[in-house]
Image (cartoon, rainbow, N blue to C red):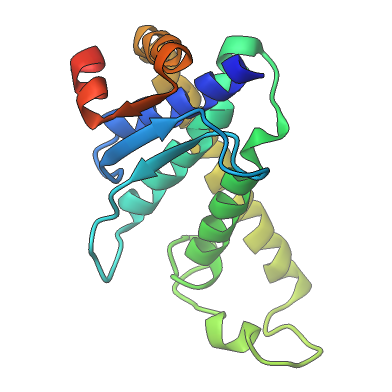
Length: 180
């Protein structure tokens, strides 16, 4: 279990290290924080008021890289990505249905309409299916992107997971020393 967690967190850290728009890594740990977080990667969020599409996609890729690392290394996945999946699902649906960042759905936002306490949706069943399909496509594309990145950086992934198993907590300086 500890090895799975080490690779999961190393996946986040390695992908975040090499993605241009990811938040800077401060610390990565495989020491559990309560029942929910078996390990964690802590980032320094950039102070920004708006986000570009490519920034959102890089963060989604980094978030899915924990599960991608599990798939690559063990050819299996665990329940450890539940919070990650919640996050990327919210972001993908927001991109499609709130921020107008999807060509098929278009420059529309259903944000205000979704918050009303009514019994009807502000869009058709066809549009609902389209939103679902497009959100899934975004998530799947970032999951595949994370896998490709980690396959290309497999040496760094293995080295970081091994160091995490030895030290349990790593900081930015450790990553710089290990992967440049």
